[in-house]
Amino acid sequence: MNKQPSALPVIETENLADLPLQRMAQILSVGGDRALRRRLMELGLVPGTPVKVVNIAPLGDPLELSVRGCRLSIRRKQAKALLIRKSA
Image 1 (cartoon, rainbow, N blue to C red):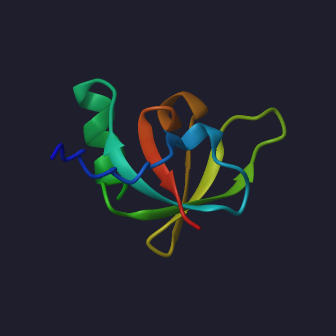
Image 2: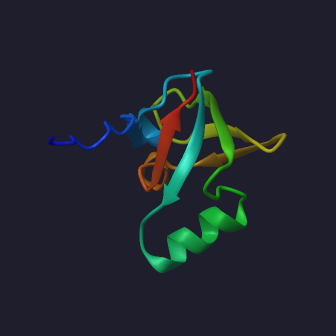
Image 3: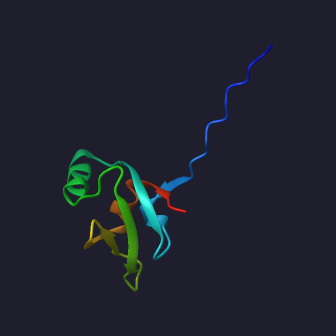
């Protein structure tokens, strides 16, 4: 009898720059060069952390985020280094 491998759950991932306003997500990984990863993690953007985009500047850059009860702003280019999973 052939056993087929169990289907793994499909996790939709994207980067934080693509997250719509007021939508919650969880950070899965922090990419980019070493200095950028360090800066983002120092700001509290570490894997497992819930995050929400609360505002976007009129020209689309920077993004205002809500992380661990604090508000912070990062550039869209920096947000692209953060891989996220949208919350339901």
